[in-house]
Length: 425
Image (cartoon, rainbow, N blue to C red; front, side):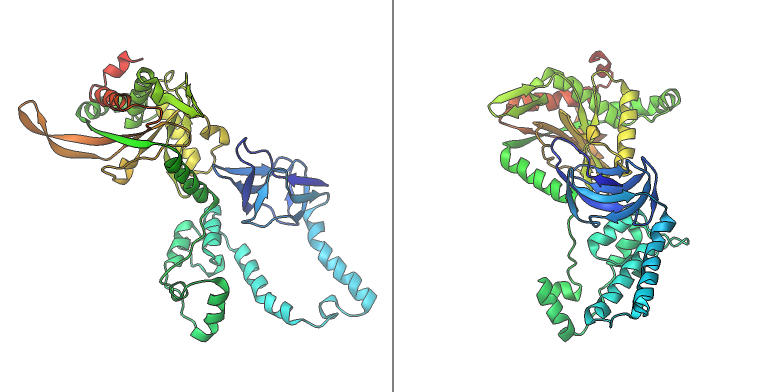
């Protein structure tokens, strides 16, 4: 018999939430096979079984918070068939000893009668075919999967089906019958009428909210803005993108240009690549740039390592790989720790201008925005140019205004003259 414990996750993470059990009691499990998915503050972690056998007992339910080292399941010897047959054998023994079938050996209590529909509903929900993301969303919204009508002809419930079901008006019920329920749950009349839908925040969303609030309260954050004429970099990308894809098997995007420009500017303005530790400033001698990626559960920031040593193709490949892992919930703790600066691109959602918030202990973050054609004075003429607003948020306790403005101006100059990036190494 083996105990499944919550493994060491990371130095700063001591607990997680049971997102989904991949095995149920009576299921066989092989050594090294995933048995449960944990949701932590940063990433989802799949826990394996160290022994082969049968899942005997689950010590925590989906949605429960568990701590590192806590026993969450028991795996024993045997087969799934043997484990499934135990209840039947137990009932047979009870029949022999009492002369009465186990099901009728005691009168049904009122509690048992009331719990039966709930148990039946839970069983029906468990039998429903659904994606892990859909199950999680349904659990957070308090929706029975069995009540959802999927669009998939195979009957698989997806996130879109859960969202569509949750947007339906709630069925009205007699006021007298619902009044005690509303009082017990603390729900408002607007909630009971369906005018307001209460939704529990996921662990990750709670953590994001907490961290952002901490940054706002513990830093002297300011933001400086500039705008970039994207004409030259767009022309260069248009000329080279086909050859770039052919030679490197990866598309040439704008992120590699901005990452290289940021890296060059960090070298010239080292205090933007720093961290405040009490009364000490830690000047980082490496360039690990975080690239913000939007996922279903919120924004995550995986790290592109050593951007000063990577070429454009290597940066584009790293960004693509990390973005895919983020959306597939396959990021590891190592993928998201140790960054020295962050780039976030609200332009992919159409944002024209925004003020990005600092990421953790970093003292600088660059915000990119949508490219929009605007009339610009070029010499003595007015021309229509593709322009992008950029924003640098920074911790004024570490970075002076001259450094922040100089940093952003250097990024602007390098993007407007992309050939100069080659001279920056």
